[in-house]
Length: 553
Image 1 (tube, rainbow, N blue to C red):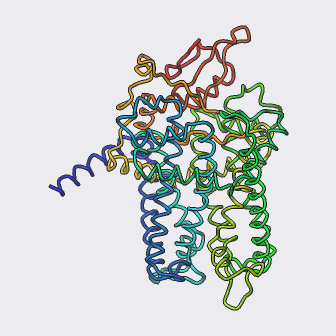
Image 2 (image 1 turned 30 degrees about the vertical axis):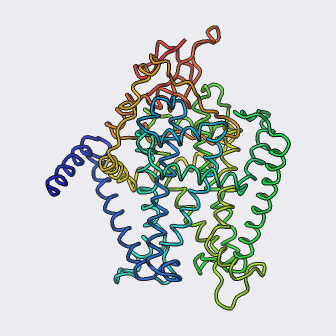
Image 3 (image 1 turned 180 degrees about the vertical axis):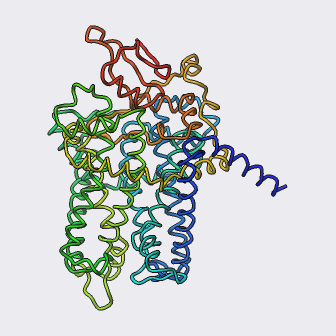
């Protein structure tokens, strides 16, 4: 019976995969097969390294701990990434509709959608993403001179020395796969205690004040932009205000200490960076990579903002126009291609930053700033670099991009990195993520949200329509959906008919249309392609709207 069941599952999965044009035919199928093969080989090499004690944790402590850390970090990352799509996407949906069918999802959404908790969650989860990447680096990155199975040095250098094996594992298993299912099967994805626990951890990280320096940056960019930060909560006063500002000062002090300790370690050659790189170059590399990560993080925020601005209001910058022209070309495939290529870029840079900033004190050497051995051991696990990267290399750039999207796109480097991301996506390195997403969905039994809460029309008929829009703009970190345009055909069909996903896209992709004498007319992109959105942003009237758009007066 088990053999028959497995065979049936395999046949159904194969049919599901082959029905998707993106991975089921021609070049897409070839890329998917190669991508899955590279992933399997990468995982085998990583596990082999850890079993031989050739990584930091497996060598310093025990291989078993390295396996636990790696598997735990990747598993948690799947919930951090998929849970974000679910919690943001369910914001417009009335929780009473799924209170009984998905009680754990209801608990999570009730907490996340209260006041400004969604902003707090997004801030905390950003640190969790960076921390899990650093944890994977500690568990799986090879030690200097590591060998495995007698493989040629060139193979070791490509897959292990460059970090390609860890990048493929993290991107395909921990991020892209979970984002696909988390944004299309939202209710099922977070209907578990693991999702609730992850939400509370993210909220706890924000509450601790560790990242509160980000709020100071948020206030600064809002002041410079001359725009208010919209909040769902009353202004802080009394004890709450005092507690908030004390945490901001504490966060600034921690941020300064992280930077100082990292620079001291880099100049002294006390990090895990490759021995061939001199200290001065390592410092330059550190700041360059921080800027690259920040640029890529801010780009998606800026692209989201520009998608809502009419073409004739996007300024006169040559590079801003070239970027928008490339981004919204055709049916919007380039936007989804950028998001996938960007994921590869960001994770790659994070792994290099982790290697550059992770402190390593050899026996007999003095500790950083003369701290105790116990505290130095804590520093050696890369937490200082993770904190600094989260605030200075991620959140701050996103906040700046949310306040000055047009100025951000005027930077020539934005156009250059857009091209690089599109090239990385074209290679198909992460094409296997669609296979993993299909397998995950089949095994977990995820279903479309409309199965549980009905269509948007049915919800409106019950007087439980979607009535909560996300707060975007200055100081908010909401990003573009990743896979709606580049998804396989079956997933695109899901995007067209799934009301919860429709609500998600509605809430962040509303664009003004019509003429000046009809200001009350709004065309909301319910579910369609980026091409539709870009055409609408150029001022097309409702007579040009495709079937995928719902016109409301």
